[in-house]
Amino acid sequence: MVLLTIIKKIQEKEKHMRFLILGLDNAGKTTILKKLNNEDTSEISPTLGFSIKTLCYEGYQLNFWDVGGQKSLRSYWRNYFEQTDALIWVVDSTDFDRLEDCKKELHNLLKEERLSGASLLILANKQDVKGSFSKEQLTIILDLQKIKTHHWYIQECSAVTGENLVTGIRWVVKDVCSRIFLLS
Image (cartoon, rainbow, N blue to C red; front, side):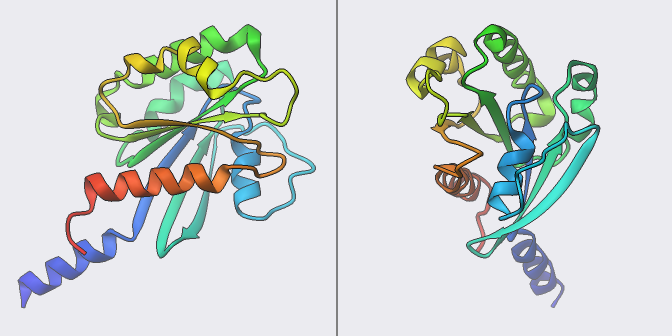
C-alpha cells in the first residue's frame, strides 16, 4: 500500500513542470507569458523581482518563473534555480548592441550546477521586426553549437503576434518529459 502511495505521488508530480524564464531586460519575457495566457499585452512594465504564471498545456501544469532581466537584478537569478526543469532564454533578436552581453549571461548560467540537466529553449523574439537576426545567425552569434551540457533548441518567435510561441513550448515540454518522467 505504501508503494502505491509513493508511485501515485510520483505520477502526480509528473504533471508539474517548473520553467525559469530569463533574458536581458526588454527581451520580451513578460510579454511572451501574457501572450501565452491570452492576456492583454498592450501595456507591459519591466519586471522588478519576479512573477509566477501557471499555464495548463496538454495535461501538464507549467509553472513559469519570470525574473527581471535588468543588470541590477541578474545577480539574484541564482535564487530561482532550484528544481528548474527547463530554462527558457529569451533573446531580443533586434538588440544588436547587447548580443555579446546576452551570450555571456547565457553561457554563465549554463555553468550553474543547479541548472545542470535542465532543458534549454532559446526564444529568438521580435522576429516580427524587420532586420531581426534569424535563428541561424543567433546560433552563431550566441555560440549555441558549443553547448554540450544541455538539450537545447532555438525557436524564432514574436511575443507581439504570438507566432511560434506554442511551437517552442511544445518542444520544451516534450524534452522535459523525455528526460525526467519515467513513470506514466
